[in-house]
Length: 131
Image 1 (tube, rainbow, N blue to C red):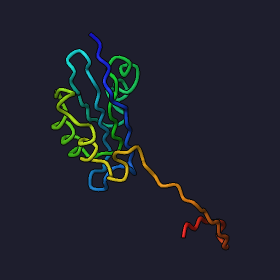
Image 2 (spheres, rainbow, N blue to C red; image 1 turned 45 degrees about the vertical axis):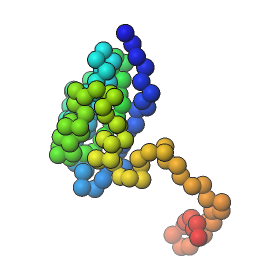
Image 3 (tube, one colour; image 1 turned 180 degrees about the vertical axis):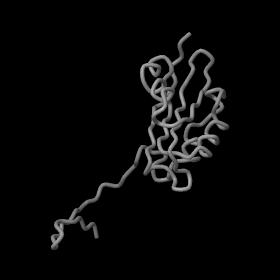
Image 4 (cartoon, rainbow, N blue to C red; image 1 turned 90 degrees about the vertical axis):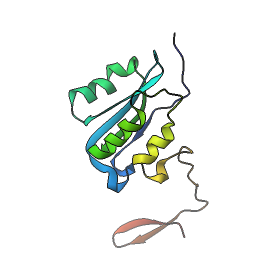
């Protein structure tokens, strides 16, 4: 049986991670469609397991979230809140809130488009002034 989830993979990179949660690890949250559970792996970004999960294995186990540049402690929190839990029990946005800066969570970056952009020149070159 194959069920399609309404989940979109999101990737959060170093600068999008809360400062207190930053480190040299990465976490991958992926879906096992057979039992409709999330599985989470935390490791160094260059580990063979991380490369395997984010590579060809992602064709069988779709990736829901990738967090790059997190601390081991933050990885443990993600594990505790997702590992082996039913997809119906886990809200991915709640996982995001554990490690990602608020600015990057939800609403797909609902950024305001400026009505006017002013370029100013000084001795160091051009700069944008939105005031």
